[in-house]
Image (cartoon, rainbow, N blue to C red; front, side):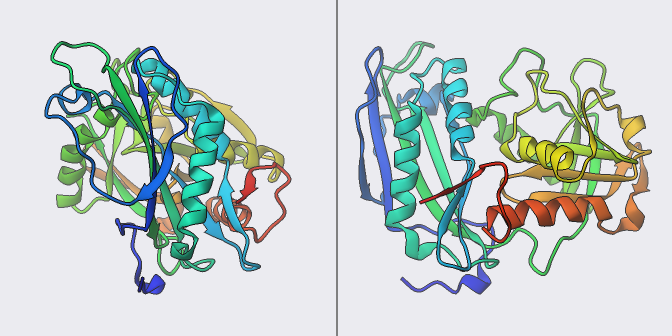
Length: 336
């Protein structure tokens, strides 16, 4: 293995080992095993290929300065995966199977983890209908897979504000649909609006709700936050918004560490344009400051186009916990 960790971006680099377990419809999950990283063999009639019966998770392993390997809130990913399995008619993966698979993959690929502040080992658990089926129904067999890839820091050289474009041409999710789970079918439809935004010089789109087209739901595949004075506001989990692990962590950190008032409620685009600071959150970037939003053809700047002070403080506090550089009073960090 020869990897220049300093040159890593957020892109795929194969590692040595992956984990795979299988389950037949109506049975329990088998223990599974570690295997060399390899391509999969699937029938052309596999349910995941024909009907999109599948979902994924994403989390990271960090190498602390003292050499410890740290996971961030993996039990929350396990719980969200189980909820998603139920929604997509797949057998839920037991928490211990999920956690042991993640730990084993991280341990077996520990030499791929970049040094502290050079990146992380991104871990991708997958569950999908691997069995062949022609009619629209749950697959006869399912696979649970975990692989990993070293990735660089999302913002090389420090936080950088992003520019966003509000779209009225596309919706991310509908009420009572699958927007609240990490279904694989949620992500390909976002590629077209994202590419439209990038061609116009924006990093991503801001999605409005599908009913009134008035309230902000998500930024691409990230959760949205607005700061008004000493109040942090984020859209409530209505069923069409993903319950992000970073989202939940930001809310707790803001309230308990910084004493901010926290509100989970509808946030209209008109209200958001009057915020003091805006940012979005997700596993990849942790926190992304929003420096500009284009709405109805007009650019609106926030924090002078720079990183807002509260946004920076939340980012630094959260990443310090994740990397093992600060005390973890929340019990979020798990050592491998």
